[in-house]
Length: 319
Image 1 (tube, rainbow, N blue to C red):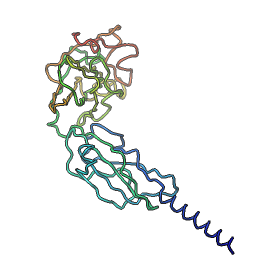
Image 2 (image 1 turned 135 degrees about the vertical axis):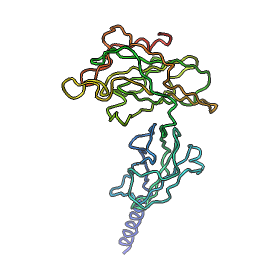
Image 3 (image 1 turned 120 degrees about the horizontal axis):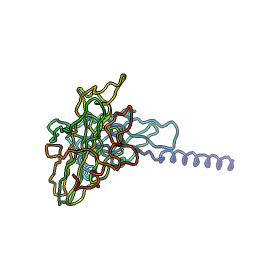
Image 4 (image 1 turned 30 degrees about the vertical axis):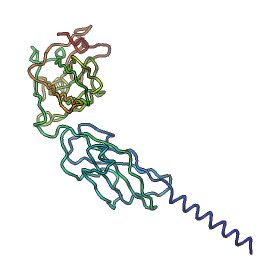
């Protein structure tokens, strides 16, 4: 009898421990993304879509509710000074959940967290803060204007690639710097001789007759006190290069153009904007092989063959 009683108590203790183990199993949230990206810049969706992933070693775990909170700084997030709190939402959604707070502002950084509950009764802690940064939402946010190389060209064939450049100076401590750029044609930006970004064939193929895609770059680390040089090399691309058949050219236009705007925010809260305007210098790309860098279309060749470097993006003082 005693053995049976002891065995029953042992089974009960084991079962209780198992139940406690389930109850104590950590539920966490990771891989927070905004518009499918981690910490993205240049978001111009007015109601960005937020996503996350659940982590739990148990099987058969389903999200039963979530809560999102958004603030204008990490400090505000920690203090509960929120721009938007979704409140507890009884739903299994964990992808493409729309932001539902007040209207977002151009260029502002927003910080957010999420916590979830699951079908096993677990409630996660708040996730680590994530962020997204808005792009230029209004036409008035663009202080720059379109500029063209205005160099003599034969519009029936590819020409040597034009280079547009502008020098500027500052002597303040930089908080952050963002470069916004697009082109009629292809562009490759450089700052102080260093290539900006890791993408090729920007801004990409689009319906140029009514839409231009632009890219946003964090160039904070490329700036230096004193004189800086911002430059862009242009290429035909899909805009005016050979496209489709019969060596058809100039499908969307005949003149290459650049629209770029560098916004530098200083530690003291002031800003400096360096945008494309009539003050930019225009010239042909010079390299060790002057005939090798041409504004060729993407369907027939690259704009900058391996092993060539345009000298004028390297030397700040060159003309």
